[in-house]
Length: 426
Image (cartoon, rainbow, N blue to C red; front, side, top):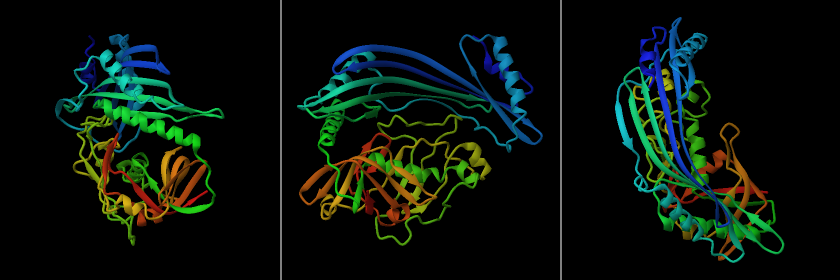
């Protein structure tokens, strides 16, 4: 095997280097209805090598890829080419993360499972939900992954982390004499619970049935709108992006530490953090692509901007002594005070499926297209579709309510509902 590490270390023109290897082993099953059509297994390794060159009081960098077919001469030529390109880059000086060895398996109950047997068990759990008259799972794809990330650099970092994860893509469908309606389901986990998988797909089956029966309500109307975990996380991720070191360094952030995003409001105060490891979350990690150890970071504390976060390079530019690392968007939020029976006292719209929550901090906007929602009016619940919502983000933040019930779904842990007051629906 070619000793690329030694080649990099002995090259006098290279000031620093990093080698990142991402290995993915997969076992994939493709179903049409309940019929298994294709099984595929893959084993890939992607190796990228950023080379850093200090020159003229600046630091330049350039990255090249390494393939198994490459010879020692090929790699040497790539290194020399990367050095030349790096001399054309004039970044402010910074250091790579230093020291630290780690070899860790992220939590999962699937690590010792045989991929073929596990795939069959997951498929059984998915299709156990296909029990609804008029409904079916039109297509289903199951992906079992074993990921290994190995990062080494010229300052002594040598870290490896492994994760077992599953992604299920399914198309629940409901068909009547008049029409056929579909929804897309993307479900991810690192711990396999057959009952949880069946319950998730069953919920989507009910929703696609309800979408086929949904009506367009009389609009425009002004109504309270409840967001579910996926959209709550999207909102918090948008707020977190404003606090990224790189955004702050480039003066692209709207809010500074100490700013109160919920000033003067009478709603629940929003507290959430970005965390490195969240049970069951496939985004969990112990270190980032630079090999920097990840540190959980509180972004908002009772509505007040509490911390910035981000990659080591930009943390150094801002004078941060211990950068958080480039945290994944695993969100952990504190619950609020809203009880479900209180939420039912007034009419409200519960978002079930959206084309994507749209949040624009600079234009003070939150909204999006709603493909399916439930209009709650006392004891009457009506599925509705074909509508959009729009509100001022500042008004939403100042008056929002958070449920007392905490759930953990994917990359989110926190209140299961966020209630926005007085939203315009068209």
